[in-house]
Figure 1 (cartoon, rainbow, N blue to C red):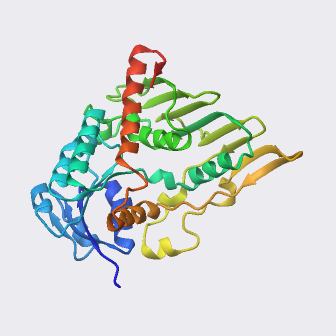
Figure 2 (tube, helix red, strand yellow):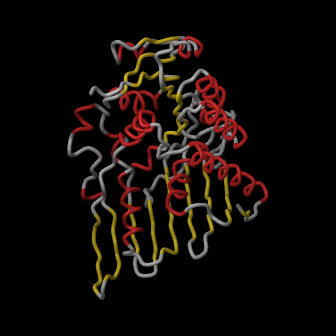
Figure 3 (cartoon, helix red, strand yellow):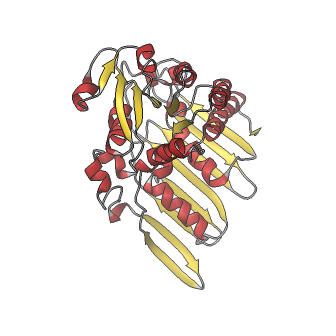
Length: 349
């Protein structure tokens, strides 16, 4: 029996679509990209022969063959475009963040339920090799009871980038909406909802129009979680720091999957998503009376797992691993962080 093919339309063909969404959908069996919304160019037609570039959303949604619409536009357009896709009878995947407000997110959840369509957000960093390893380290118990967890995503971008919407004064711009969803979603997957939250959100660069730094602290019973990101970090900091009652784990470096082109051949390689040994994290702990201090091999990353799950969810008519409710929790936390920063207060969730 042949495998069902899901026809896909991609809304916008910018950097993220070119680097992640289109290559993954093109490389994985079960998907066929048929249309891409490009207002000014027809680059997708050159990159993927057989794909047709269209200039407006209406033309893309009018294609009855399209099963899934993938939305990679600036954040402020997510709600309206996802709403239109769902109401046109399409399943929808949105680039993170879900929407720019919880109100919009809840409305999309209701529409997806009414239309009986899949709605998910591209939280691909659940399949970072380092995050998969952190999950394993915590669940193994080698650190004892976890008491402190720090996760950060730093960059050094000193100058404002002209004509870059993430640094313009528009809804959903700034580093909190850009990098916050990655760190927040991972924390929620590990630990669930915190009891309290405190956030310090800043504009550190001169003349910055949007936030370019955040420091969010999540409070659980015995555990303190810190999530940080900034654009003025020139010296490499640990990506993860974990401290428990019997040991610690420290990990440097970002996931390597973005360094290699996504192709069917590369995804099939046994080396896909594997880090070099020098990037493996350090474990220092005690196990059964033995002191253990050394490197922990990082598990292989697998961004393809996101879309493989989306395929199975649509074909088997089951909920996706990354649910819209998960994405809603991330947006709620972002809004709570903004309120905490405004009040300079610890808030309950």
